[in-house]
Image (tube, rainbow, N blue to C red; front, side, top):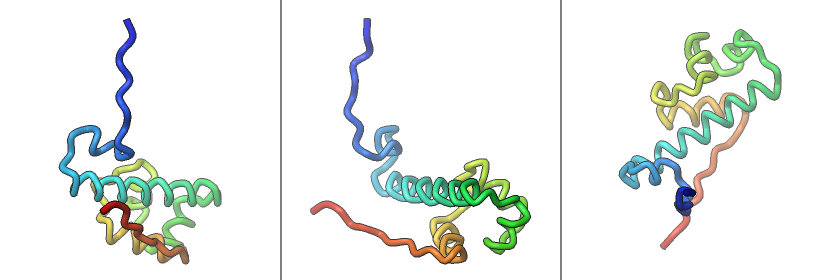
Length: 95
């Protein structure tokens, strides 16, 4: 027998039962971490090169590459994007 398919809300953290406010923050942090990891991977940066570009310790780059989102605030992730010369924009959707 096949499991029923449930429509996603568009936010995995909401679907997992997190409070809507916390789910929104977790989703933003997840997107920024994934973006930073993709940038480092695509540019084929070594951790030492990433340290120089991001201005953080090697252990923090390691945390970032391992996806340890709990170690990074939303503010810090936005700061890291800015250090790469990127702008983070927030879009509000809904009523």
